[in-house]
Image (cartoon, rainbow, N blue to C red):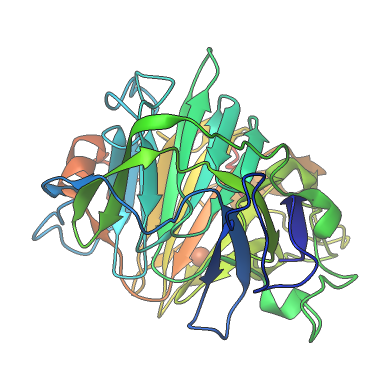
Length: 396
Ligand SMILES: [Fe+2]
């Protein structure tokens, strides 16, 4: 990430910075990896340590589905409607391990009457359908269909969705979500061969400085619970901040695909990374242009990763049973590849209109109990018979 600031800040850090009444603003350094990672400095009207009351923790989180076995998996969530009441209770985690999880989320309530802080994970929201804004201590990040919204841990925020169709994919990461290391120079700037650059990243705009008093609930997620903290002032009591750590939006439509004469491997689609996983974006692009190119992917034996594709847009309906909103999990240890007939049918195809988000993990993923209802039991056998058409999803 890069340096950004909003609002008023003093000319030097850790010096006196006075409010109109002569009292000091309260400085808060929000740092990652101890003091070795990126950080920001926020200036509060009130001490961020002062709480009014502390409620009982409420259990919150998914449960692993036991004894699922090793199998190619298709979770079809296309028909799912509202998944819960609000932004937290609507999260249906479908796949998880200790490094990350993947949830669908379509809340009935478009606004939150509380604030939320994830104290143990960064969050990536992929806005499949919908638009709205994340209102945090760092300001407002507006988002629209196709955006990734990256929210670092401990950012206190609330989210407001606009009216209209709504479907959000929520990836939670135990480690910091970062841009791809091989695309950064030694000072962190994105290099010329990166599929996106700093101009594509949308930092918070329009700082909200809320001076109101009252009761403000912040639900803090940590260790399988939501902890209920009540403050007597708004957590958005920030007059200014600066630093490298802030929530942002990045549109999948700004990802510039890397193409070649022959089939390019999935790392060319990589968009983000964390410890033990990568997130990739499959976007509309021209197909391979060698005279003997095969646009469809080859069979692939992923010996040490589990591969999840979330199908957002495109012609993947020709893949048997796959719909908009489907997930496939191709676990390590089993070869996967195009359905019968699709390799031959792909020859001569010039471009793809597909849009998909991939999560590849380097440790096995588990289905959750919430995933069970979406399992397509026919999928493991779907390579046995001739397919109906060309599978446009081009991930090997
Ligand atoms: Fe693969």
